Image 1 (cartoon, rainbow, N blue to C red):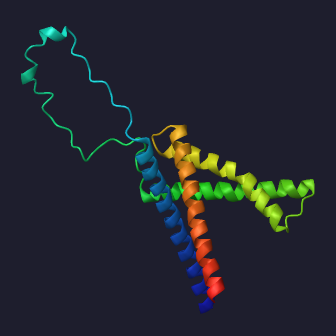
Image 2: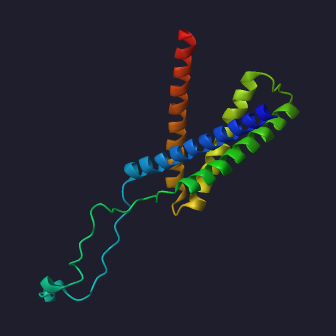
Length: 179
């Protein structure tokens, strides 16, 4: 009985750690996208009207004296919190698993054998656009941003996931050779 509880605890801790890791990766993707895109276009200063030559006493206007803080620049995509990122990751993961299961049923009904690794890999590749669209829509729904900026965050997030998987695979490969 005690070993089963330890196993359940380890699985839950692993899922929570993986969720937080993926949420942090999504937050990193938003930060990297903001660095690439830059600040949103500056809003036009409201015109006071009149003719520019008549505004000879603009040196004493108090409204222009407030300086903007240089450390606080606007971002194209506001940075989400860790819990918001975790929620987006959970819903996207659910959609990915659901899409994989439904595509598996469709492949088996056509006559493909799902016990083969190649077929599972092909179904996972077909599922990638569904996952990307789900993540983009979730980012648009949870952050005040447009679809194309959310799609750019999705692309960078996928790139980071692939890079992380390659690093993890390289470490496993080296450990396999050494041990």
